[in-house]
Length: 174
Image 1 (spheres, rainbow, N blue to C red):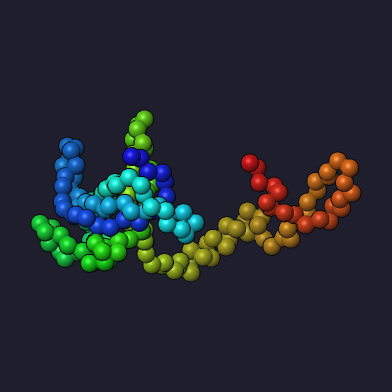
Image 2 (image 1 turned 90 degrees about the vertical axis):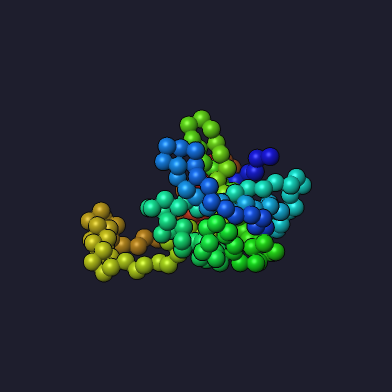
C-alpha cells in the first residue's frame, strides 16, 4: 500500500539500529510505526489496511549531532542495543508526515515525525546583515511601500470602474 503525501497518526511498535546496503554501510536508527489514521483538514480518517512504516535517523558522524537532538526529544533511553522511548509514543502515538524521495525514475515514501528536524529555534539576524539587506533593497529601487494596484479588468457588458480594488484571488494564474 502506497500512502499519499500528508500527515498521519501512528503508534510506535519497534525500534532498532540497522545499516544501509551501500558501500559506506551508513548506520541509522529506525522507529517502526503502525499507521492508524490519515489527518486531513484537522480530521482523522482511519486507515482501512494495516500498514507499518519506518522513520529513520541517520547515525553517521556528520548526522549524529542532529539525530541525537531529535532522539532526545522522543525520550530515547540512550541504549542503541535496546532502544526505548517515551511511553506515550507506544500508547497514544504521534503525528507523522509522509513525503516523497525521488531517486532516478523511482519515487519512495519518506516518513518523518512532525515537529522534528531542522532548526527549532530562530536565531536573530545580526544587525550588520539587516543593514546590508536594507541597502540592497533600496539599491534595487524598492524604496517605498506602494498601495495595492487597482483592477483594470473590463468585463463585456459590465460597467466596471477602474477604481475597483485589486483582488489577488481573481488574478491567480491557474
